[in-house]
Image (cartoon, rainbow, N blue to C red; front, side, top):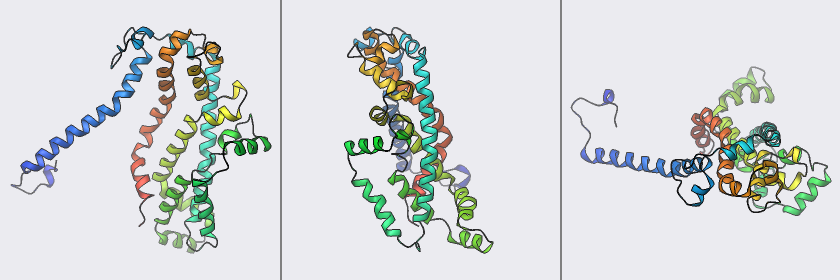
Length: 301
């Protein structure tokens, strides 16, 4: 609705505008319900009994309140060690990724850079072509990174999509600021650290969110390159628990000390809840930067 303080005297909303506002509000509420329904259902299932879930009795509220699966998973020392691994991998991976992406994007944003087209072409080429699973595995093993943190954080250090968005953002920054900084005696590193980065909080927060979510949710790289359970991220630990739902011989099911029936009924819901809690806690702090960061970095001025 139009702000009453800004409305000219004697002017009222037309009937069609009021109808549009009501319809738009209803549609947005329905959209929110549709988006929240799966999450609420999963949350309810994670606290429900195995029998109620199998019978399809769980919707919005837990049926046969049950926390045995939570207790079984969270009372295990391996779970918390793997959770700490995930925090470490996410923090280190995001720091490395942001360092490489921001510096690479800033270089590519300079029109006068010799070889700029080649550098952009190399980055874009990797979006469409890669060596494949087996060559990547051979490369990681040959570099001695297997069963180390670096096998997780280095292969995904630069997302070309994030790189191009950040490059477009840097290109839209006022050139006068950099020229004034050069006149004052700042070099390129000084301009980048003291001028460009402070003006890029929106896109930086957005890219931090993108990278941290990617590293937090990744389990496949660990599945390929890590053999030691003490190095597993929590997503791989929970993935093994899900695998244990169909085979009692699974190491994940044995580590949790749960029955197959309990795991098969509750583990998927518990897995999702435990995995997304940290991201849900972080997202509200960066949400206000999210839309502006993506839009500013995707529109050429």
